[in-house]
Length: 230
Image (cartoon, helix red, strand yellow):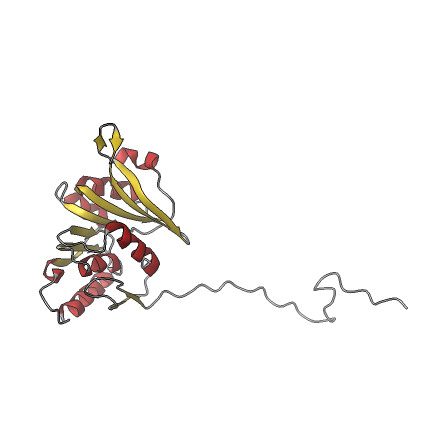
């Protein structure tokens, strides 16, 4: 007795008149409603995240690695978050003792949210005065704000512009001008930047990691010392 022939495809085994199941549509994760500060005096404080197109809070794991690179204690440092968005990077720097933190954001609704977070942090009872008195939220365009900074005035500059905006070269050039001699630039982008790409700005890659679609870099100024690069 011959064995029944198995269908060679899903359609061959379908009952007459049956309709095919629609293809599965990829499910995209929703933007998290909040981000959590992971270090310093405001550790575990949660910040609300607005539901805005293109808003990408830097993931906890990336921020943790970043501040391992920069140092857990930023006491006395001057910082600017040029494309603040949720403010996670700037508020994290302030939490870790930065003396001055400027958060710049162009979107008016996000500026309002940043100011709410600032008020939330100001309302916290701290054992001693912290860097909150020198934490400023400013509405403005990131590159233009960087150009207004005094040369060599910033120890840490955070650059996380919209991925679809053609702002990277201008932002990096402006940041390099404002960077202190031993300062660091944090760059988040959809591609890896190499020393050759950064050479026109006088920058080199100090650290780099890839997390999903994000490339995170710490950049430093190119300083010739006895033929070496610092």
